[in-house]
Length: 152
Image (tube, rainbow, N blue to C red; front, top):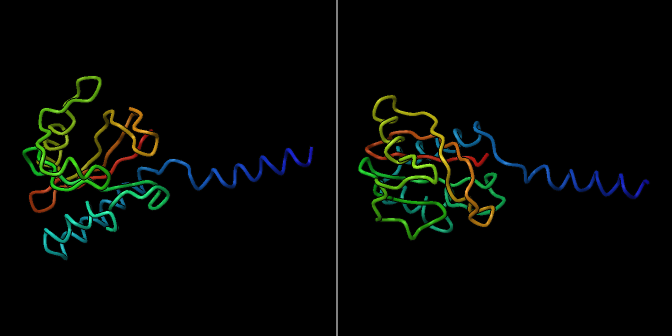
C-alpha cells in the first residue's frame, strides 16, 4: 500500500508542472511579447518569435508550452512560435473544424477593442497536433495581431 501511495504522490508531483497553462499565463506571455515588440525593431521581434532559440518560440516544457503567433491585419502570418512554415502565408480564409473564421474574428476584435479573448479549435503541437478547443489572448500592436493561446 505504501508503494502505491508513494507512486501516486510521485506521479502527481511530476504531472502537476506539466498541467495545461492558464489564461492568465497566456495573457501575461502576450504582454511580455508586446513589450519586447515596443522596445525592439520589428525584424528582431519577429525573429524572436519564429527563431528556434527565441524566447517566444515553443519549446515543450518551457513557458508552460506557450508560444506567440503574429499576424498582420489582413491575415498574413508574420511570425509563428511553432509552425515557421506558415510565415508569409495568408490565412485570412482559414476556418476551424466548426467553420469559425477565427483569424477574421480576432482581427475584428483587436480593431474594435485593442485586445481580448477568442475561442476556436486548432491543432495542439504539445498533443501530437490533435484538434482541441483553444482560447487565445490577442493584442493589436503596431499593425500586428500578437497572441498566445491555451488548449482546453
